[in-house]
Image 1 (tube, each protein chain N blue to C red):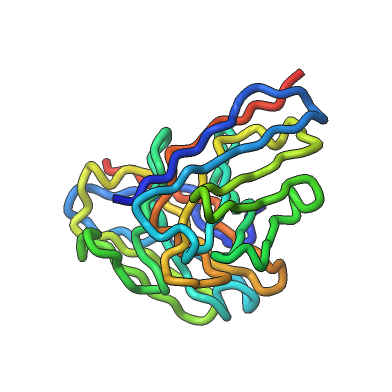
Image 2 (cartoon, rainbow over the protein chains, first blue to last red):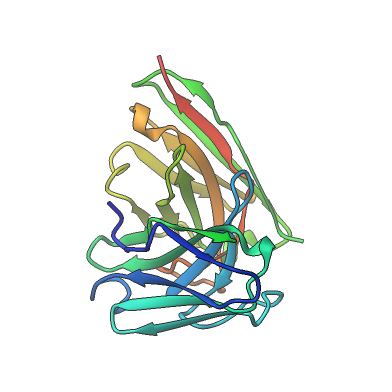
Length: 110
Length: 123
């Protein structure tokens, strides 16, 4: 049971926009910034969004992040087949005094 | 360019110990916090431990507290994770990850990751 809650799966067709949610509490998302990662099995995870809504250089503007209260979202527009991967949200938790990840969302491009 | 290379994984019996290393290059290692993150087979990512850039503070997940120890040698640009009293549920790929942000502290913004090293705990 992860501290941050994500839907286990999401899907869309090429060109569509999909959104992945991440729900937490006042001790994590409510008081610290959220980061999003993309992970393909057997490879190193990649930082997609940091500080709630910032994109590292090299990440396409098709990826965007937002946060409201104790929830955050990752949006992917113009869906492409190569976007198929597992997506994770993460934040620091002040009560646990440690980092926490969501359970991950497996994105399928139909 | 930034490189993080983990080593030290392998098969170990329950209750035994193992030490993982992460060799860093391409950045000023002593200026950045470092983490260990793991992924058990078929499971999601789990944050394990953080050590600040100067080693002054260390943080652990409850699941490993008292059994694992994170450390660093800034003169060797190397991060370590000592794993003691290993359990079957510690079986995972262990990644080292660099914090984004000069001297940043308690954040989960990891801009570079290694390829991981597999630890299998089995009798």
